[in-house]
Image 1 (cartoon, rainbow, N blue to C red):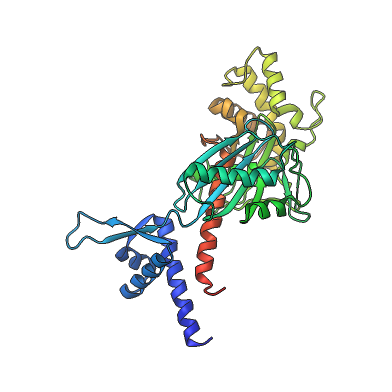
Image 2: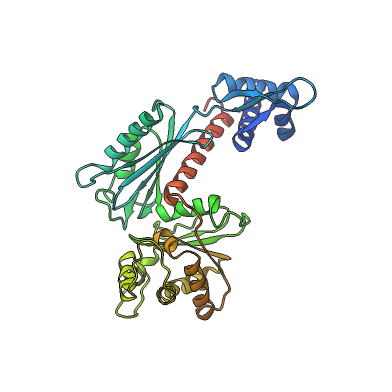
Length: 379
């Protein structure tokens, strides 16, 4: 490579290093950037200047309270790029969406009732991006990535969403149509997989070392799911995107065909009725919790025997309704049913977990693209 090309690449790598630290730390002085990057004072100053010229970095005031001149503080330009997260479900609201700036701050959030029997998903997604930008008072141009959470399995081979109950979301060609309509990259992932990302970053799995995995058992009102975190947020999706479809696990108990027949929202409501309990808020009846835990363990014991995770998190509407009492009941039932010891915890994510995970994934994608562009000048 000619010397000029090498110089250009080196400058780009320096800029990427500086921007990466600003994304990680929020605000830094040039002295702090020098300490983090190991670059010289002139090199850091040049990198910051070039990033500011590209509207990726802005001044964020001056550091005070220290001897000597007040150092200027720099931060990423929050409006340099936006990430969009959407959660799609068969129910109300059928589409929930949020817009996040480059700092990760949520700038707008909408619940959009959508009749997917009348509205094509690609049209709905594009219109929702427009609505988010209007609500945030920003233009659509900086929107750089959209992440969708869908209750289904995304097959990477045929690029079709399988096992999804929302009308229109299983048609062939939809993934390409979504990207075309949005005019930016659109990724679709299973909602429970994305909920696991939220649990790792914000919930019960937050304290796990990066090398440790966990499983999230999603006990949802509308269905079941299992996300398998292999460590550090790396998810096992399977050859056809169907890893974790635990609701289809065969179970021949009390006339049930599969685990869904025993632990779905409908099944839990029927079980609660037998105990004279309303499960819409909290599950507090000890007998009900013990019986429900026994049903859960029929599937969970097999998961633990195969994967041996250090932690199982119970999430979803039913998991949250059962709370710590359900966690204790499941742990007690597991001690009798499985020879391997596994910690049982209940989700601590208060927000819409699939949407929150989708936001994290979308923001990571936006930041990764920005850094990759800097590292490949002229590409």
